[in-house]
Structures are given as structure tokens and as C-alpha cells.
Amino acid sequence: MKSMLTSAVLAAVLAGATTAASAGGITLAHPWSRATPAGAPVGAGYVTLENSGSTADRLVSATTDAADHAEIHEMAMNNGVMQMRPVKEIEIPAGKRVELRPGGYHVMFMGLKHQLKVGDAVKGSLTFEKAGTLPVEFKVEAMGAGADRASGQGAH
Ligand SMILES: [Cu+2]
Image 1 (cartoon, helix red, strand yellow):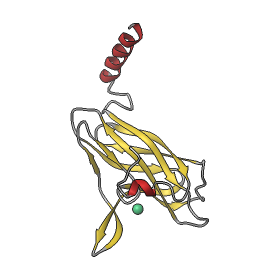
Image 2: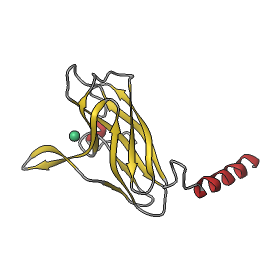
Image 3: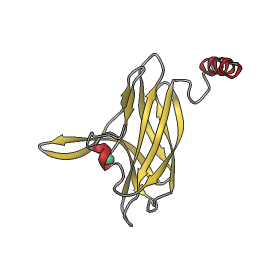
Image 4: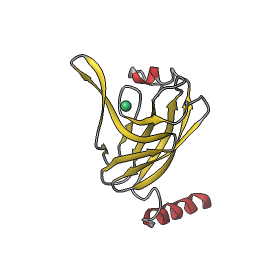
């Protein structure tokens, strides 16, 4: 009971602290990446964006220190061919979550500085219109990881 009360007070304090990284109500869940073949020029980062706030927010940019720069991409069918293209932003509606995953939205690491190996952590940041810039660490999983998730037959 006492710890519940403490949590409630803490939550209230955090909600009022506009300088906190999570002030906008955005939480980053399960940031991960895929191992890349040697010499691969690009890699991709995936993460679930959760908006617990009462207003929509937008992911507007990303950075990573594993590559020259990072872009926000989406995969989409174009004349029957899966292609990816940069997008300006990803909207996360109030109270909703948006999953960046293989076959959908992703953070593209452009100009990899080194091969991504299983167990590595790719450091970077995600900047939101309201929540500001949040640090993120994409954990590198095996090359085929996430294929089941991309099919829509999620494990959840
Ligand atoms: Cu891409």
C-alpha cells in the first residue's frame, strides 16, 4: 500500500516535470536491430513507440553513432514491389502504440561504420515533436529475427 502511494506521487511528479525525457508520454519498448552481412552499407532499427499522453506526438528524426546518419523509412508496396522510402514523420496517436518492424516503419542506418553483430548495441536517439529527444539503444538480434512478426502472425 505504501509503495503504491509512493509510485502515485512519483508519477505525479514526473508528469509535472516537463524537462524529463518522458514528459511527452512517449515510451520506447524493445528497441532492436538485425545483424548485417560484412560490408553491408545500411542497417535498420526497430522499436515500439508507446504514447501514454493525451495528445498525438510525432517521431520526426533519428540519429545513430553506428552510421553516417539515420533516416525514418517505411516499406510499402509499389506496383507489386516492396520498396522503402523516407518519411518525414511517424504519428503516434494519443493512447496508442506504433510498432516499427520489418516490412513496415523502421529507422534506417545510412552508411554503416561497421558490421552489426548479434549482441551489439546500436546507440542513437529518437526525436519527437513534443516529447523531445530520447536516447535509444537497439539490441542487435540474428539476421532472420523478426520475420514471424513481419507476417502479422505476431507472438503477442
Ligand atoms: Cu529503409
